[in-house]
Length: 260
Image (tube, rainbow, N blue to C red; front, side, top):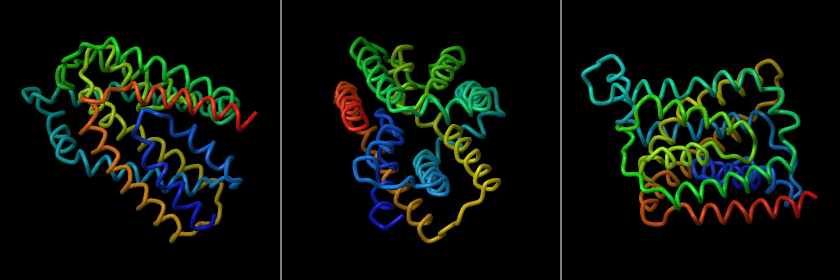
């Protein structure tokens, strides 16, 4: 990988990881448009650790509070802490059972384009008809598990983990900001599991590691992801999700045109 490819893909990953617009669609389309080779597993590990660092740093106070609340039933965040745990379990189980399928047939451009467009439409519907006012603290474990089950769909490339969990949150009565915050908190174990799985694959199938390149990629991904989270939470209540839905439809069309 040359420096331009490292910078572009790391910044792109940082931006799209937390926006409801499908990171896999972008990371397949951009290299295809520019004629770049696959970035490799080590690069994927680096940018995932970068984005994980960003969300942990941004929500550090929340995460510290939730860690303590998990062992104190009187704490107002007790239910939220265990809701996040329960909502993570379906993805962990499905990821182990579906690993070969996800890395195989589901990575076709047709699947990615269809998921990008279809779940974009669902996002628009959930937002357009949303009158929810609940905060993430009022979600409850049952609704949290439903969001966790929806997160399994993110194993299909093009779905967008952020997009599908925000869609489910809106459909279950969360406000836009609350749906986004719960999605971002839920991303901590999700990205952690993805990074751990990729690290395991890297260990068992070693490839050359350029530590300087990986450090740069992780740093760029972390910085842009932090900025993306902060900007999204600042504006989402006012702008809504319709722009992201339209963008997803356009992205799906471009994927089909370029890759077919």
